[in-house]
Picture 1 (cartoon, helix red, strand yellow):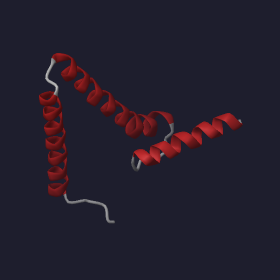
Picture 2: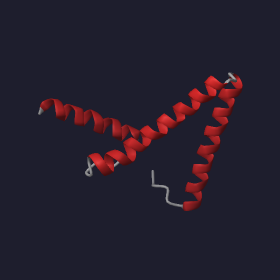
Picture 3: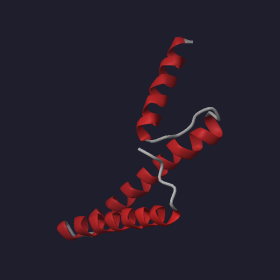
Length: 89
């Protein structure tokens, strides 16, 4: 599969992800309305966004400049490999 490079399609993809996330959040809150559910959903989304930033940006720029992010699966493999290396020596 080729890399997506068309700016218009990239923006469209981003907007669709945003719309999907908002729709899902609204449906969750409508399913179980309440301040607690809304706050927990907001906290969960925020925390996952921060983890993604950590996996994508912080590791590559502050921890290991040799690491190149290519997805969360790649980050998982990287984390497991680093942990094994740390145990060995």
